Amino acid sequence: MFDYLIVGAGFAGSVLAERLASQLGKKVLIVDKRNHIGGNAYDCYDDAGLLVHKYGPHIFHTNSREVFEYLSNFTEWRPYEHRVRASVDGQLVPMPINLDTINKLYGLNLTSFQLEEFFASVAEKKEYIRTSEDVVVSKVGRELYEKFFRNYTRKQWGIDPSELDKSVTARVPTRTNRDDRYFTDTYQAMPLHGYTRMFEKMLSHPNIKIMLNTDYREIANVIPYREMIYTGPIDAFFDYRYGKLPYRSLDFKHETLNKPVHQSAPVVNYPNEHLYTRCTEFKYLTGQEHPKTSIVYEFPQAEGDPYYPVPRPENNELYKKYKELADGIPGVYFVGRLATYKYYNMDQCVAQALTIFKQIGTKLEEKPIVLQPLDLDRREGYIQDGSPNKIVDKSLETKAVTTNGNGKVASK
Image (cartoon, rainbow, N blue to C red; front, top):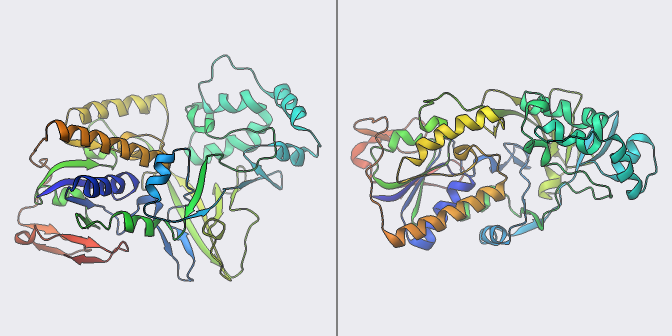
């Protein structure tokens, strides 16, 4: 009997698995449909020996000391401050927009005080800030909005910024100094040996068993557990009862190049040309020294793995209907970006998981709840043991399965 079945081995699921096992002595089974742990933060070495992020760049930054110190239990850090350039009018200029961006773009020599006056002269006054377009034009005006934001946002989200919630572009600041860091958080660093190594250490507790290549519905009725922590899409959990929640997906085109450096910045945004939104060169992020370099282009799309909840009022209303269903199921915790339909950064996922853990601990101190497994699609007699296309007899269902983090399964 497992105390917890955790669906999803990304940040939310892995943090909760580690805390429940190490702090409360709970037995945890964590399952994932993919062949690896780490969720979208998974990194691996390509054929040339370069460390790459399979699902696009994941840059760690946080203002939370608690989150940073918690993750420091599982990794050393490489200091890293992220920088982005945008390809606009045939030039590569700093993004977010700052003093150097404007001076280079327009051939000016403004001071910080003069830049404030410049922004004030071009900004459009908005009585109410409702949309992503409102956020930008109210700060830097229509021309810069068109050059840097409108087409990029259209590509990324599939709709015009005038139809997107203000939270999307509010994440990107505008500066009047020369600070060209993309983030200004107190803690900015990358896991020294990569995210996957960090997840492997996080999930190395003997009370944690892992099943990969496994849909939780295949095992939920044959492997006993007390409570569930679900980090997948909330609409999928309820079989899309009210329809699908809209997500944006990405297609990644990885390339290894026979040269040491490809571009002048870790990430170059392409707001106006090309079908892709940006190009990332991983050696900037990892600090790896290698005669070759590896890059990835990101092509946003409507279909595919769900990455970004689309923040629009009607989508939030649909989510509320699913949340009402979720709130009515005792013993199931919905955690993470997909399960709560929120556009979380990595540190926010960790913080949410740590908060849920504290809630679970408080609840256990009061009165434990013992539930029967949910009545999911039962497959009588057999279970999948975590290996691709491998089915074992149900009599072996108490056999624990773990992995080495690279998709290879080893029974214990």
